[in-house]
Image 1: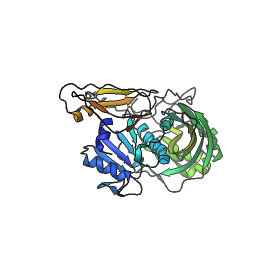
Image 2 (image 1 turned 90 degrees about the vertical axis):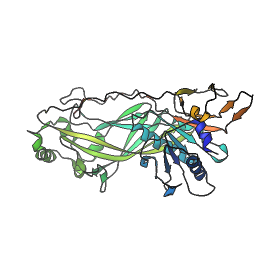
Image 3 (image 1 turned 180 degrees about the vertical axis):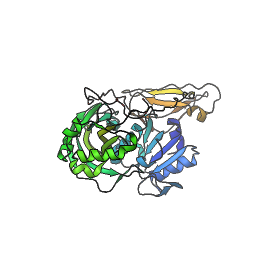
Length: 393
């Protein structure tokens, strides 16, 4: 296996190699060595929780730790780990709406690849709710993957958050569980029953409207709300900033998903969410908003190569005229598909003398989030606060 085979499939600006290794004879070492020796000039991010480095580059423990969203993820780990890695990459991509997508190549010694069913996996992101009213004990889960999330169950614990890093700190509270259900594009999740179990006076929070004479007195006003409302077992974890009072919840979402052949897989994903419990109103102050961005730079021109869905044994013509350098030509290919999918193919170059040179088989996984049409139904019928309570709308 050489880096030339990958160049014929994609020409990314950054690579993450899952399963990168220093062990002689391993696929992970061969891939890393060939990428580096092949002169790849973009960012190379080896990923292996058991290795400190690979080919002189520091290894990252997982997808969440790498410094960006890679253009291409190369996976050389055992087949059973592939769905989890793709889910992690999906979560990283979902957190970056400015990144249109990423490609994934699943490589195996001997040319075997994990089944294309992983393209049917759900890809989830959380949307926190705020504004309209002070008490918003809910959030939405949006699915931009191509498969349905089935029989989801949530486990959630409340936690303190460090004021400087905003990361959870200390021991979290007890775990509460709730059934979320099955959904395709998205679902609203209410945590009100969980708050009731924790002894929080949700009725007082729902009915109450809290005010403060000035922002300078917010600390005093926050203390008054904490005294007036019974927060039960969650009182030690109540936090928030400025006018907002709320709880940070951490936990897991456990669900199943099925591929096109009817095989069912279990998935367990961590999550974190901030729940707005109260909003302290202060006299309105004009917000200062800067000008918008002046526009996007002109994009480089590429030749589109669209891989069709559901077709087999087809060819895509990519004519080359003149004595053009083949490497520079393949670097301008924009390879994509209309949905997350796996394509197995080879590149064949036909020359004027009648000869043909063909690459080794390549497995190309194109990862493209689905545009979710989910619209939350959780917003109250009437509002006494702006729908967006902070920032420049």
